[in-house]
Length: 215
Image 1: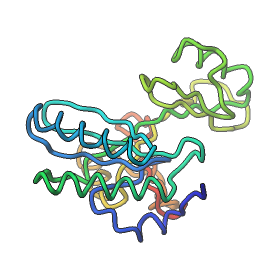
Image 2: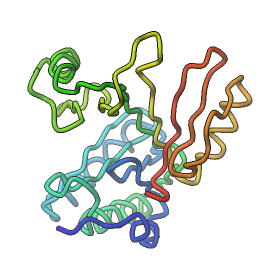
Image 3: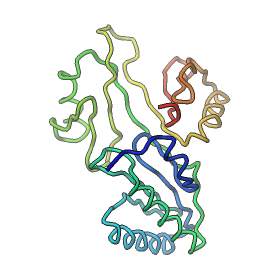
Image 4: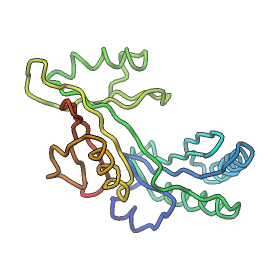
């Protein structure tokens, strides 16, 4: 299926959902385990009807849902369709969503030699040294964050090689950046905002706040 552009996803009017990195994410505030379990059951029925299955995480106060067309490596119309159906079912049950809540953390490692480093990090993080797909180490079981290799010229330590990428909803990024700055951080580079903004802590360790905008 055809991947949807960022603008097409924004124009779809998915009030409950936000795209972070590759997938659509939503958090439904169920408030208790029984209500959450009933919602998960309903989502399962919708998924079977659609022949398209989201990732669902049930906890006591909420249910997190992730939608991605794996065969297309991104968001397609079938994800949007199922997202609408899930929101409708949640709405019928009086279950609200918290669209500012979803977040995805990725690890980024600067390296000039992906071939040498990739198998090590794949084996360490996933137990499988072959779990390297291009510049990514992805755990198919979802136990650890995705690690991606940022190509760079060879350089010596102690230059920082690792940084965190924090994906947040596009309409929550400014508040998250402001909170980090208020807590002692600084904005190092915002020339690529709102796509990403580089922040640093008091000792200069960097992280990027990322959104889907202007990508």
